Length: 351
Image 1 (tube, helix red, strand yellow):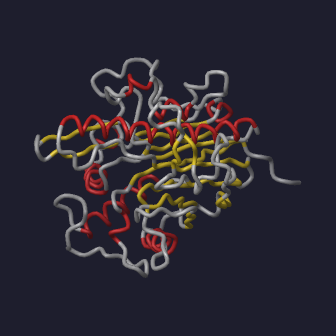
Image 2 (image 1 turned 90 degrees about the vertical axis):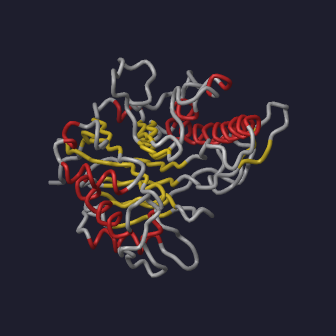
Image 3 (image 1 turned 60 degrees about the vertical axis):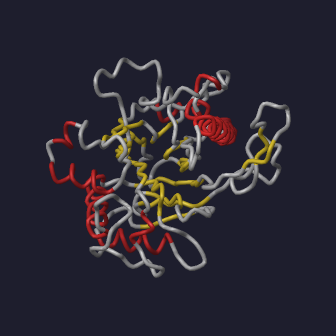
């Protein structure tokens, strides 16, 4: 006996800006972070997207701020209640200093979850705890530096009702985009430094993935990696993208994770390669699209033949036919959700 478990990863651009300190909605006609979009328009659009997803759990990237004065859990549970979502409970882990949190919302009738961080404070280990530091030679000079996540990954232990225990890791790795550079040389130098830092995060994550796979625990790693195979020219200098590192390309003797959109050896995609984000470039008056968001699964889950979907409003045939959802996806965020439907084996009910 099986059931379909739907999980999604969704980077909601500056979600925190739509809530006040009490977690109440700021869905008025003031400008949102989204260009030429009001807070009310973005709030309504986000609700329409989550309603259409109808997922059992969503890993929200750029979730509302969790701090001494704000509660991501309260904000998102208010949001879920307003739109009558099944995924109506929220879980947050180690917080960031960026006002953007990784938060899981989930259906408590389908699963019970808890924040379950692994690792320890030993920064020299293969995978310290994600709110500590990691040692990595950033400059190739034989001297390791201390690396820390600005947005620590969210480690979740999920018990599926009537089914297996599964580990989720929600990820938002460092952006490679240079900031405030004043010359081409400075742009190149910062690009390389950012990629090195992102690769360090990738190796840190891979260490945790290897730990979990060694325990034969089903694993799903999902989120915004700000990277992808073949995304830019700097990748050639390092051999792998951070996405490939997490999946296991740099560790061929270990079990690999799988995401069909990240597989370099997949069949040609033709005129519409998979992309999960769309950014407007004011200087060029045009859009730039990239594959940045992934749902990677362990071999045991891949063996169940799950189905992945990128909810792209201009590329997905089923969505293109729904103009209301097309508009909502374009208004809600500069990223689009990625979902996976898993044929989950269920235990028979007790006699």
